[in-house]
Length: 412
Picture 1 (cartoon, rainbow, N blue to C red):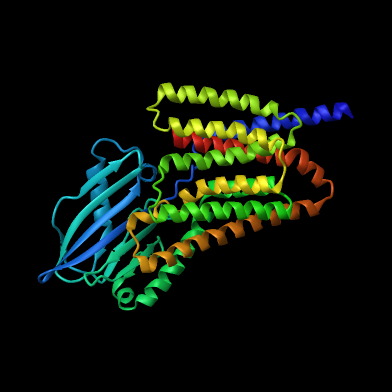
Picture 2 (picture 1 turned 90 degrees about the vertical axis):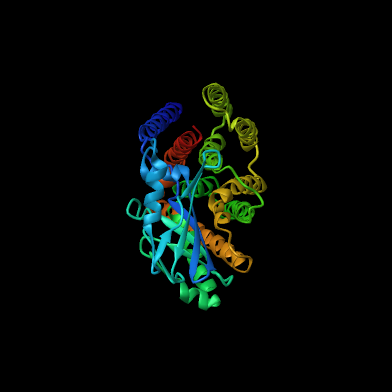
């Protein structure tokens, strides 16, 4: 019996090492930086002509992935491509040179330009980045000279915007915007591999229905709060650090599972402490150290969290931790919404629609994971022991490897 346990332990250890090596060698894994951009169009009447001010925004890290390394002179090339990707039905000419503002700290590139049009714009066609990434989405807001405003979600399948119809019927515009943002919320989950990985980690940790329900509730409350605060511009998160933290939360839920399953939690926690200390020192000495304060708090929280997790199995603890992680993911969900400045009468519906879409996407993802698990369990009663001692720890190790990869890829 003892020999059998030792053999199981060695096999499991070998499998974990193989998983870690496999993930570590896959440096081309998508770190899930959603392909999104947004613009704001403001139209003013000037005599017989119309002045159109356009502001285009995209994440710098996203632009790097779409365009490759941004070498010298990239600003002129990118701005020319972006401006030429938008066409209108009006006879418009550019009035000045585009203005480009880049902030590496905020991970943002903004390009602004001014059009003079002989007639009011009634239609916009957008082809920006769809040729480079078919999953790219673009959110545009237009403010007309009469003060009316409308929003549009562009995708590779929906590249034309009939503005006149939306502005003439404000109610239809709001209804369309609401549906579009439900769709965008679902898309955020379905294409967000790191968020899906985190949801899977919650399911792995909370295999009983009650505990899973509490964990999902905590996660929902957390991300709904910070999604709203970020969208309303009450809190301005540093997007690069938030994206790195999302990867770190994935590694943590996988690590928590391993700690809970182990009777000797110090076997995992002590090596992790030394790893984090080494990483902290290397980061301090070999980088600009811009996230050093955040990393200090993060690593202190990690050690305390895993120490408590090894001793606390209550549902309230899962609720609390899931809520904290939800706060982080909420910034990742909606940090972009404030960029285009929605009108007050339309903003709440837009925000609610997006959040509802996120919830629908979460429910579908969790349901799919649970159904697959039930099918595997029903195939053979022996599978339950096999899953408990082999599959689940391997899946947790996979989460640790993926989360660590995404964290390092985004923080360095």
